[in-house]
Image 1 (spheres, rainbow, N blue to C red):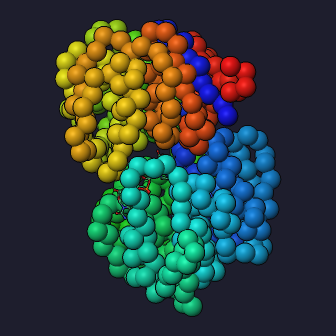
Image 2: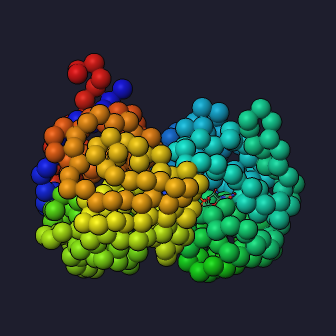
Image 3: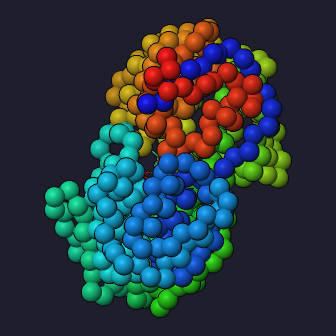
Amino acid sequence: MEKYVIRGGKPLVGDVNIGGAKNAAVAILPATILAGGKCLIENLPCISDVMASLQILSELGASIRMVSRSTYEIDTSHLDSTEVSNELSRQMRASYYFLGALLGRFGSGQVAMPGGCNLGPRPIDQHLKAFTAFGAEDSVEYGQIHVRSEHLVGGHVFFDTVSVGATMNAMLAAVLAEGTTILENVAREPHIVDLANFLNMMGADVHGAGTDVIKIHGVKEMHGCNYSIIPDQIEAGSYMVAAAITKGDITLHNVIPKHMEPITAKLRAAGCEVEEFDDALRIQRTGELKPLKLKTMPHPGFPTDMQPLMTALLTLAKGTSIVTEGIWENRFRYVDELIRMGASIQVESNIAIINGIEQFSGTSVTVPDLRAGAALVIAGLAAQGVSVLEDIVYIKRGYEDFAEKLTSLGGIIEEVETEKD
Ligand code: EPZ
C-alpha cells in the first residue's frame, strides 16, 4: 500500500503540462470496438482507469501496441468475446461504456455491475432506457448486466436526468443502428463533444454534441482513424486550485481555456488572477481568498468533480462559503477528513457551510475517492506541518504523475510504501 507524505506551506510555482481527459479516454477506448479496424489514440493519460480499459480491450481480443506512454495503436478487427471479465469491470465505473460499444457492433454485450468511486447511488437506468429505445433487451443476473438485440434500430430518447454516461453510451450504441436516433436532454460536457468527434472520424454521422439534442444517422460500417484526446478539464482545474490554495503562481500548458471557464470564473471571484492564452492558462494568488457560494451543475455549470477541491480552497477564505452539490447524493464524505485537518465545515444534506480558518494543520487522513483525494492533497500542500494520506490508489485512477508534477512545482510530497514508515 502506498501513501503520500506531504510537508505543507510552500507556494507552488512554475509550469505544468496537462494530460488527456480521463472521462473522454474511458469512452473513446471502448469506442474503438466500433471501428473494427486500427485506431491510433494519442494524448491518453497514464492512469489506472486507462490501463484497465486497455486491458479489457485486450481480453476481448483486440491487439494493442504501445507507441509511447500516451499513444496506443488498437486493432479491433478480430474480437473474440463480448463479455468483459468480472474483475476488470468492477475496477472502474466507466466499464459500462463497453456495453454500448459491444451492443453497437455485435448486438450483445456483458459487464459486471460497474464499480468506481462511491458517491452515493449510481444507477444506470438511463443507459438501459436508451438501449431499450433502440430495440435491445437487458437482464441482470449474478451481478452481470447483459444487453442484446437481433437488430438494433435508431430511436428517440428523452433522458429523465442529464447523464454524461447515458449520453455517451447511447451514442456508442446508436452509431451503427439502422435509421435515425434523436437524444434529448443530453449532457454537454467537453468529453461528450470529444467522443462525437472521434465517432465521426471513424465514419459515424453524429450532430449536435455540445447542445442538449444529439442527432445520429446510423451508418453501415465504421473504420479506424488517428485521434488525439482533449486535455483534462478536471486535472487542469486541480492545478489551478493548487496554485490558489498555496498562494502560488502556475502556468498550465495543453489546456483549452474555454473548457475551463466555469472554474476560472469561480477562482477569479475567490480573488485569484487568471490569464488566458491560446492553449495555456496562468493562475496566481497574492491577496486573501474571498468566500463564495457555488452549486455544482451539468456543463456549462460548475463541475461536480471540482467540488471537493473548491471546498478545500474555501476553507481558507475569509468568511463563510456555501457549496451545494447538485449532481451526487453523497459527495461530502471527505469533509470529515478536512475537519481532522482543522476545517470548520457543517454538512446538511447536499449543502456544505464552510467557515473560513487561517490554516490547515497536517495530520493523517484517508482518501475516500478520486477527487476527494486530490482535495486532501492540496489541503496538505497548504497545511502547516506534515500530512499523511492513506489509500492513494484512488488518486491514481485519475491523476497522471500527481506527486511528480506537484514536486516539480515546488511542493514537498513523497510517495512511500507502508513498510518504509
Ligand atoms: C461521469 O459519471 C464522470 N465519470 C464522473 O466523474 C462525474 O462526476 C459525472 O459524470 C458528472 O459529471 C466518468 O465519466 C467515468 P452521470 P457518470 O451519469 O457518467 C444520475 C470523476 O471523479 N443518473 O452524469 O456516472 C446519477 O445518479 C468521476 O472523474 C441516473 O439517475 O455520471 C447522478 O446523480 C466521478 N441514472 C447524475 O445522474 C442513470 O442512468 C449524473 O450522473 C445515470 C445517472
